[in-house]
Image (cartoon, rainbow, N blue to C red; front, side, top):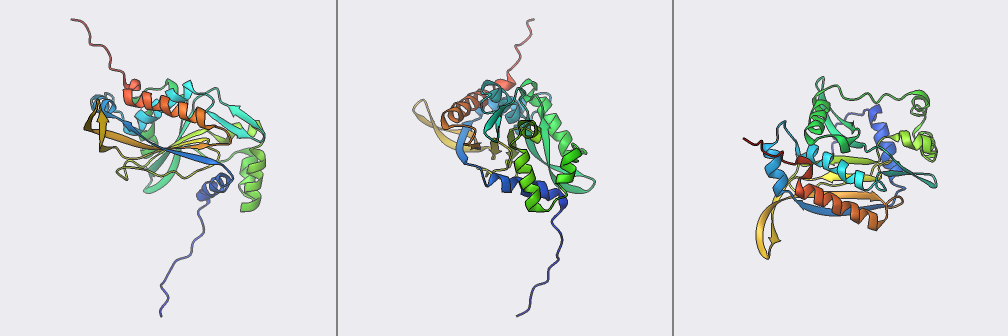
Length: 261
């Protein structure tokens, strides 16, 4: 029996932070909620939006409004303390195309509750086809990342128990959009140090009941993953219902009143 050929290569250095986050997430207590939102109104408004609005841009802008209403969700555990952030930032996973390469990158959308859906969409597009943000480590983190895997992850875990260090780990909320690759549900991979992960699927037409009748509506499936060590069930449910209300009303895409003649 012949042995198939193969090529051996090292794990790319830019994958190490991802592996560290996955190991860190294995110590978390994740709760997943599968929800579907009726996006009939959003579909109509996105189609007419000027400047252009992407589905991911719409959702992240809407998510920012929901987080502003529920600051207890925009938080992170640091040892035996909880950090609640006073600014609404969201990390968005982006497949970036640059210099002939395709790599997975993170775009940090800062103060997203103050941004329009079109501005978020433009930022994501710029990240997708531009040089992206610099994620080069600085100071002590540069030295930590040179340590062997077990020591590196231990150092990061211990550092994360200090509020000042935990606050520097980036946003507490992240979004990953798989809608361009699939119709229907996406899937969630818990990644530390995110407290909430929103996995976006593809919009699909489904039969639903409205006013006692079965009708077809475009439905947006989401997987919401919460770190139960930080967010209890009731706050998570309230946050989810606020997100539903804002998405289904397309509130972030309010139609400007027509000018009077």
